[in-house]
Amino acid sequence: MPLAKPAFWLTALELFTWAIFSTAIVFALIIAPITTGAHLLIPYLLYIALLSFARSVRYLDMTGVRQSRTDTFVGFLIAPLYGVMHIVFLIWLRLYSLATLRSGTWGTRSSVEVSLGDGST
Image (cartoon, rainbow, N blue to C red):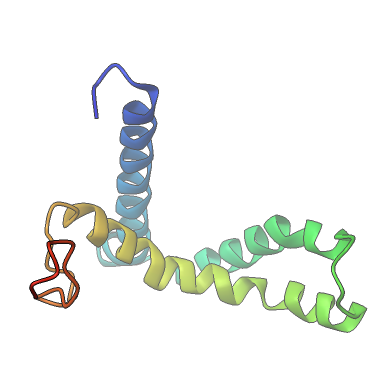
């Protein structure tokens, strides 16, 4: 991807943002408790829950979705679960996938059974 394209810079900005955010998570949950004795896990989890509810509030007012009000409300209530899963698993998975983007060995098959050749296989 050429450096002059906006897509390159948007991708670089996203990578930089996630690197900074991940560093902040490590600092807040590991380094700060060791150096200052301040345990930030509970405020951090409350912040995740609050932001999850704020991000999902539009889900309560969606039209055209064939769900009961109870299903919609339960979906809204489990939003913090997604927020915690995002922090615990998905951020790290994204960083790992970005770090190993050039690697072709992601656990897929080592050989392809189908050929685009002349049909001799």
